[in-house]
Image (cartoon, rainbow, N blue to C red; front, side):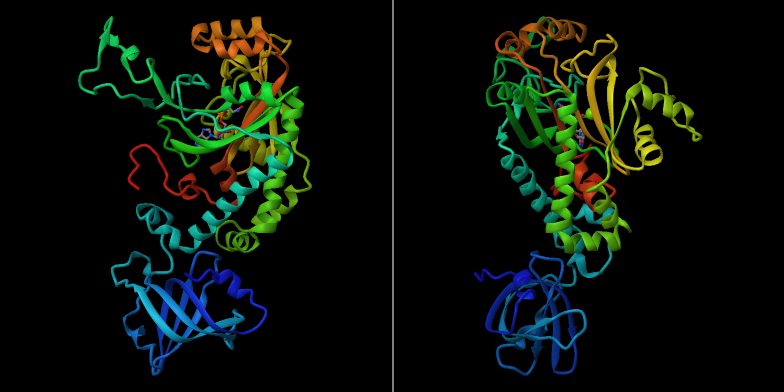
Amino acid sequence: MSDVSIKQILAAAGPITDLTVQGWVRTVRRGKGVAFMALNDGSCLDSLQIVVDLNRPGCESVADIGTGASLQVRGELVASPAEGQSWELQAESLLLVGASDSDYPLQKKQHSFEYLRTIAHLRPRANTFGAVFRIRSALSFAVHRFFHERGFLNLHSPIITASDCEGAGEMFRVTTLDDLQPPQLDGKIDYGKDFFGEETGLTVSGQLEGELFATAFKNIYTFGPTFRAENSNTSRHTAEFWMIEPEMAFCDLAGDCSLAEEFLRAMVTCALEECADDLRFFDQRIEKGLIERLQSLSTAQFATMTYTEAVAQLGKAKQTFDYPVVWGADLQSEHERYLTEQVVGGPLFVVDYPKEIKAFYMRRNDDGKTVAAMDLLVPRVGELIGGSQREERFDLLQNCMRENGIAEKSLEWYLDIRRWGSCPHAGFGLGFERLLMYLTGMENIRDVIPFPRTPGNAKF
Ligand code: 4AD
Ligand code: MG
């Protein structure tokens, strides 16, 4: 194995003799006695130009090399006379490691994203997806770095759980019961006989466990896969996505919003500083002006308005909406986008939502009607973050659970936290794929996750 990447080679300070590189052929051009190949190894957007003298012993096999083939080349790195690249590799020997043929689907330069989704096993080799998944990897590391630098404990919350945190009934079931003849009790499936002795599913959020850990470690975060069986075939929803959930003890809603703002700015800075080449590609090909938009975010004020103010703004709007706007109704994505794009023109926290449209655990405000919730809305994407201050008062939480039809027995452990050493605490959840959409300009969530899980689609 050669451990030098094409990214390192292209940044070389001077010529290098006896250099070995490996990668996949992006293009081959054959001329008189000479062939040019673009070799890419995923380390960066650019490929390394390989120049092959066809008469040179050891280089004859180039005749068999097609787009998509894997190759090992040894040669000399020299300054390139060609425009747009500083270096090229003059091949001295070529080893065709894995052949390719004319059926290889990525021959053409441009394919639609829809088509590329049908070949999700090969699309990482396309330029756009190379850039997407490099940014995804860099940002994933930056998430951990952000919290690590601030002393947050990383919690691995469970994937299999018996509690539907959001109470929206969107859990995928996990069971080992016989599918055709499950045991019955009183005309219903008897989950008491199931593997865990109760009904379980894949987690919709690590928040409840996060709260438990926050009351021991003060500041914690989770960053893991999250599952929702919501049948919404939109460009912003997937059944499996990755969520970042910090939870802070001795913190209120204002502190929660400040962390969200600091976090988003840090992610934007990371993308600008550490993924500059890939961002330039997105700026040119996907969303014109992307870099400028991101740069302006590093200094912009994030706006805040209450849900009640938001409803008033929507009521004054000149445009008509598909869904009516009335106090008490959930904001639809058309409303969210209008507020962040037209009213504010940047990130917007909407706070203090009616209690009826939010989850049971949110802290009741003194007005008796609203809860200390926040959603961060951003242009193009809509809701990027959902969070709240949590109800830390035992009696009030008990009431909220009753109002929401949640059996106390099933969440005794959650109430216990309010029994002993309760304290104000708050947190939020940020969908990692929505963040990537925001940072890259990609318009469909299916194109920023390696293998999207959506209704009817789990093939790869
Ligand atoms: O607003 P949500 O449902 O909030 C929670 O789950 C809280 N328990 C978070 C917390 O306070 N710890 O989801 C949080 C975020 C959304 O704002 C959105 O970015 C993302 O998760 N999200 C999804 N992303 C992709 N596909 C889906 N189906 C998503 N559902 C939520
Ligand atoms: Mg939400």
